Length: 193
Image 1 (cartoon, rainbow, N blue to C red):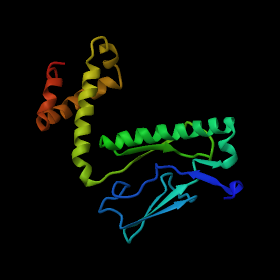
Image 2 (cartoon, rainbow, N blue to C red; image 1 turned 30 degrees about the horizontal axis):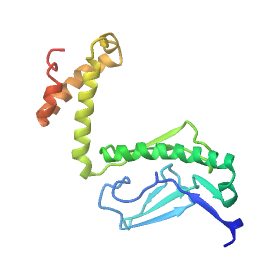
Image 3 (tube, rainbow, N blue to C red; image 1 turned 135 degrees about the horizontal axis):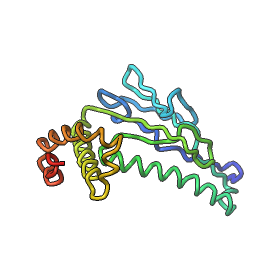
Image 4 (tube, helix red, strand yellow; image 1 turned 60 degrees about the vertical axis):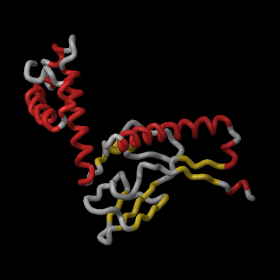
């Protein structure tokens, strides 16, 4: 084994293929992964007429050489870079598992460098997600109603932009309460406030 030439590249898991990557129809028939390549959009997903997808993985997150493994300062720096990416991945995984098909990621990044503050946001939709999307809408709207009506928060809720949302939010919640009666216990004050 030649240790001088041993390099490991850690790739981003933000760029994924399959059913939920912006495809309106059936899952991709073939998914090709392309390390080191980038596309015109930040997510790097190219859909083709033959129902295949190319996932452009972009630059590695980190490049780790054998020598760096034994250098404390280098390993701490690499650990910091990886920790930032793991935090993004956790957020995206939790959102996806909750039926929130939004992906947050850096607009740009450099291999081995901490992430900058700019983030991109992408939504992946598919008709099979209609039920989850409706549940999330109803629960989020209910949570917003509850927050706007917390004791001591009335002054803030009475000011724009929050005051402007009360009437349309009430209409949405009347629908939500009919669709999901379990929300009624959280909306007892819907007609009185």
